[in-house]
Image (cartoon, rainbow, N blue to C red; front, side, top):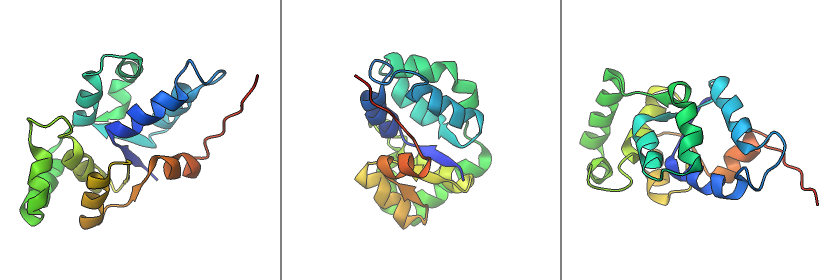
Length: 153
């Protein structure tokens, strides 16, 4: 199964599992393996949302940009237009003036790639549901992908 990850997934989980907190193989390495195995991806718009932060999450992502980012293609653009035509409430998701304008592209990319969206964002989860796109919360994804962590003193 493939997963299309929303920016809030990275921002939230990176805070909890950052390199300063998780030793050993580390959370970033675990995610990188999922990228290499082509299990997770993001649309360009999610990358751009994270890029604004300019933090260690962005620099980690920048190193794997070519492997994780799935650029917009004609089919995905068609899906974006279909969503906006069929779901008028979705038009606000495509507003380039909004901070979180990647949401409609997350849904379209997931639909295009027959993937599951991973997000805790309620509005995005509702859009997924209305577009018949499977969606998981962060914790559900981490359980499904069997993330294991150990704690030491």
